[in-house]
Figure 1 (cartoon, rainbow, N blue to C red):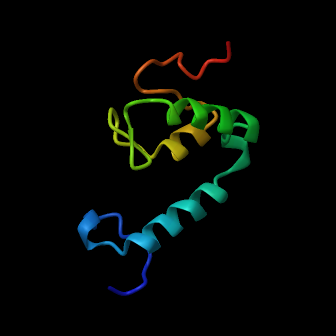
Figure 2 (figure 1 turned 90 degrees about the horizontal axis):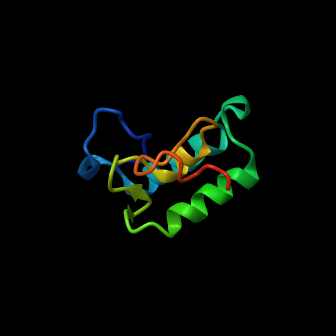
Length: 88
C-alpha cells in the first residue's frame, strides 16, 4: 500500500495502519491549545481510561472514539459516566 494520509472515506482495511496512527499522533500534537485541556489533566484522564474495561486498542467500546482525542478536548467527558473525569 502507498504511504498516503488516511482518507476520511476509506475503510480501516484500506488504510496503511502505520500511516494512519502516525497521522493521528500528529493531529493530537497539533490540536489547538485553546481547545485542549492542560497536560496534567490530559494524563489524568488517560490514566482513568487505562483502568476501564471498555478500552480496547486505544478505542472506547462505548462510543468508538480514540480515547486520546476525547481526553485531549477541554470539554471532553467520559461517554460511560459523564462525571468520571471530574476532579474529586
